[in-house]
Image (tube, rainbow over all chains, first blue to last red; front, side):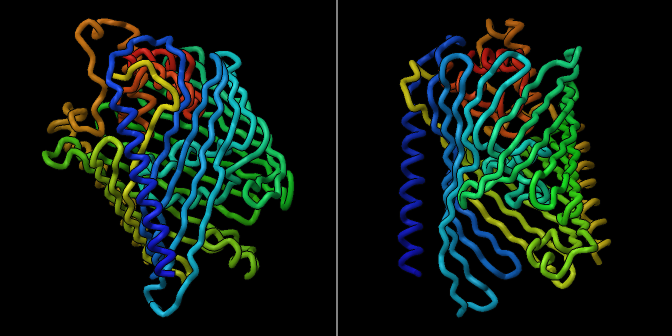
Length: 361
Length: 105
């Protein structure tokens, strides 16, 4: 296993370096282009990062590669896809003699064809992220999320779908309020890499751009298995004059996954000399498990199977526009399952055109 | 114990909020000076462009909700990026156009 780990880590170091070179090469094309109507070009973007995670004394090291491909076609079409690949090397700090085999995981998070029908409607077909709450679609990328650990609400709903979606955003009668919506139908897929549930659902949100405040609701109806339905609420506020973001989500399932909510605050120390690139993050969350669960269901559901309280705090340091170092600590309280959660991560965001751009700024 | 931790977490969030308010009163106007929050610079002629001003407003209201300011790219790259974000972040058609204009200055 040590040799395997070294080879894997060396491989990812090479990928990281290659992505860095590609990004630098792309940004080196410094001409002045001002044409807003210029034809869009395909782009390869995404992130590489390395994370060390310690959960209850079990350490996991994972180098990640998360590419995102964007291919515009004509004026109204866009093909987009995001995947991830990460080997994981696990060590039990409480029992160093225990050896875990390294694992390789790869997923196609989404791959869709988007058609912008008009200013109100965009049609999406393919494998998509389900629009439930705000974390799954908007905040899940590791180069965006303020805390590297995902909130517990994220496991309540089905997070991917295979089928079609209608979505859009438009002013709701006034420039002060934008209505955004997304409604979808997903079919059942049992492929081990692309598994999705037969489900339908949607999200409606109201965004007040002047106040930078959004509130919305989501629902999801599973059409297989226990045919449970999930409902959610989300809100986000980013005061215009303060470098702070407040977010919260609530999710409830009528099935076995219970209820959970979280509230998060992210504060940039942009007024403090020498600390402008630092961000402080705090999050509290709670899971209220279904009291009627059997022992087998509790074991299967993990955190969602027992009442859980969790508090997390973290630091993000923006080394540059594209590089971020993160550290977080969390304490999880569950019956007979209290645990410390430590995460260290270094993230590099890359972006490069896949065709001549005719000059960049 | 759990209740104490939950209360502590809430207090942490509130204390951060209080620190934010205190910080804003002492110097909140230079928020955009560091690399991660800086916004694209433009020439003085562009400052008078209404569409640019609208784009700047839409940019801060929409893009800054989830991520830091990206560097400027060519208009052809920006065309792809804003089309992607129109779908992903459900921004309106008008906001997409004004953000593209602003980011292409």
